[in-house]
Image (cartoon, rainbow, N blue to C red):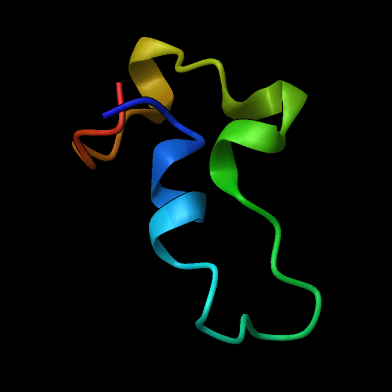
Length: 41
């Protein structure tokens, strides 16, 4: 699933105030020592 596909699926769901999607962050590039095994990549 592409990163933005989930947004389209959730269009009718209210997001929490200040929500920042992980893949919108420049820092979202995974370094081996930061990996939390979330499966996003």
